[in-house]
Length: 210
Image 1 (cartoon, rainbow, N blue to C red):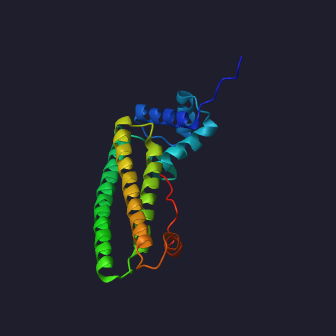
Image 2 (cartoon, helix red, strand yellow; image 1 turned 45 degrees about the horizontal axis):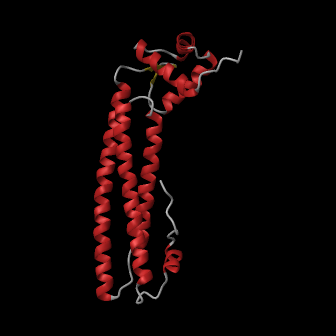
């Protein structure tokens, strides 16, 4: 008979979080190790490590009371935190959309100025920094979603849609940068090839897919 498969960390986290939600009581660490271990089937020696992962993700509350720490989770705590994070994601998306519009307008203005004046001074480094900022936002939001993936399917569906919009923003910005590279590479007045242009301003041949 094959050996019984142990619980994964995610399963242990969910069991411990469910126990907190069901009990609706405050506990010290000793009580959690003794009581939760029996209720969840998690070894008392592992309880503290599992609890720490929930604390790290802000899913369990902790306050110092005298010489000991008290832990608890009240009803709707997790939902409230998820809603707050969702609102933050929406604000980030709105800000990024506005920035993308601003960058598009800047590109058109720079192209027009370049054609009229033959001036090759364009703030390319700013464009690269903006793209880097967008990618960092996407990575951070992906990491945030992973923490809460198992707790609220409705929130995750909306949050994943928000993340998709962020990724689209990155792709549009990358396309805008490619437009600038092509513009200068094809313009005989610029005196520089596309490859040399990329090397000079640190623009990669291909942007990393998100």
